[in-house]
Structure formats: structure tokens, C-alpha cells
Image (cartoon, rainbow over all chains, first blue to last red; front, side, top):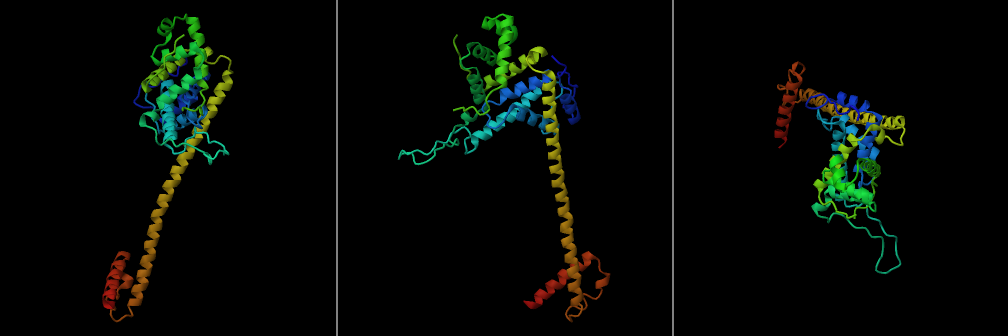
Amino acid sequence: MSAASNNPARQALSQDQVGEILSGLSAADWQRALAIAGSLCGGVTGLTAEDLFQQAMSELLGADRVWPAEVHTMVVLKNVMHSIASNERKHNKVSPIDGHVEVDDFEADDEKLGPTARSSTGITPEDVVSGKQQLAAVYAAVAGDDDLHMLAIAWGEGLRGEEACKELGWDAKKYDAERKRLTRRLEKLDPDRSQK
Amino acid sequence: MTTKPMKSTDEFETFLATFVEELIAMPDEQVLEGRNPEEVRARGLGLLEAARKDVGRRRMAAAKAQLQARRGQPAAKAIEQVDIALARQFLAQAQNDPRFTLAARKLGELSDDEALNLYRQVKALQEGEEK
């Protein structure tokens, strides 16, 4: 792991410090951040991993978001990107235009006189909780792959490393391989995957 | 293998936190496997550069807004100056009006504030006469 975790022990980093940390990220850390961004884009219409990551950096550099000292770089980036993606997801949901709705073509059937689209404004507050959507996106990404599905469940229970290995009945080599596969899968969550 | 659905927002939070912990724990070579590190870094720096430009654009927009706000203040003052000029012009004409001769006698010696006050007084008198 790189040295991205060693932030100065202060309340919040200055904009210059934020800039220094970001410009000093290693290739692996850039990839880690992009992987986190990818995992957060599931179900957010029109927002790619790169869009999300760039927006997070912009908000941190512009001091719209605080970078707490002594918090790992990846955790800070995760928190900011998670917040942006959640807001975006909620915004999509409360809009009267549902980006996930496919409008039907005109049909000759008398009962269907024109294109139809549903508004999403009737949904309950619980439905707009973005965590559910994100979980749905994760599960869609691992659908049909039992190993990845079980690993996703283990992570959802907070189990990782040796503890997860033990629960899953895997050896370290298998765990490493599946972790790598799940990471790659999460990087590519489909932003426009329908949540309905 | 059995499957168990995740059920809460908290569970996603846990999932995400665990995922990030695992990413941090993963060796760099595993994270970058199959990728060109230079290309990955260049991609990241490109996004950083775009983010910096975005911050710059937002700062410029904020500075422009401030400038416009500042320009709005002198504009208001200019209107006031026009009012003073009109007031003096009005008072100069009023000097020839037998009703206000006394009031406008020292017009040239009056400050702007005094001229405006006098203007208001004469205007009020004029309006009173006309009623």
C-alpha cells in the first residue's frame, strides 16, 4: 500500500495540502480511487466513475468539502464520492422525469393511445434511500456468480481478510482471487442500470 | 451455494467501508494487474487537472458576481449624482420663482446634502401650493 494514509495531524487540510496529496497519488492509488468511484455509480443516471471522481476532487480542492486530517485518503475520497452519488441519486428520484423509464413507441392498440411514462414522485421516502439502490446495483453486478455473491454478502456483514476467508471456507489464495474479481466487477457498475 | 439478500442502507455502508478497506489492503501490483501504471497515473492526473480547472472556473464566476455587485453600488451613486444635478437645476430655476427666492438664495454655497435637503423642502412647498 502506498503512503497515502499519512496526512498531517491537523483538524482539516488546507486546499494546498489537498492539492499536494492528490497530485502525489501513486498509480495504484489512482486506480483504487477510480475503483471506489466505479462502485458508487450504480444506478446514477449520467454519472460515470470519472465524472464522480473529478467532481469529488473539485469539491475538495475548492473547499466545498472538508478533508479531515488523519483520515486515510481513500476513506476521504470514498466519503465525498458517496455523498455526491447519493445526492445525485436522490435528485434523479425526486425529479418528475424518471430517467430509468423507457417510453413505449406508439402502438396501434386503441387502449394505448400514445407513449407512456411513469412519474417517480409517488414513491415513498424509503424508496429513495440510495443505499438500497446501490445494493441493488452491487447484486446486479454479481448476479449468477455464487462466489462473488457470497463475498459481497461477507463484505456487507463487515467481514474481510482472514475472518471472511474463514466464514466463506476459502483459503487465502482463493480469497485474493475472488477479491480481485469482485473489485474489477464493482469498478464497472452500470450507471444507468434500472433499479425497478 | 445459498444466497442471502442485503437488506438495509447500513449494510451498504458496511459493504462500502469493507470494500475500501480491502482496496487499501490489496498490494499495489494486484490493484494494477493488467494495467499500465503510467497510463493509470496519467488518467488520474488528467482528472485532477480537469478538477483544478473546474475550481478555477467556479472562482472566476464568483469573482465576476462580486465585481458585478460592486459595480451595482457606484451605479446607484451615479443615479444619486444625477439627482443632485437635477436638484441644483431645479433650485436654480426656483431662484426666479418669487415664492422660493429666499430659500434658494445661497444655492452655490450649499453642499450636495444641503442642496438635496433644500430641494426636498422646496418640492414639498411647491406641492403644498399646488394642492
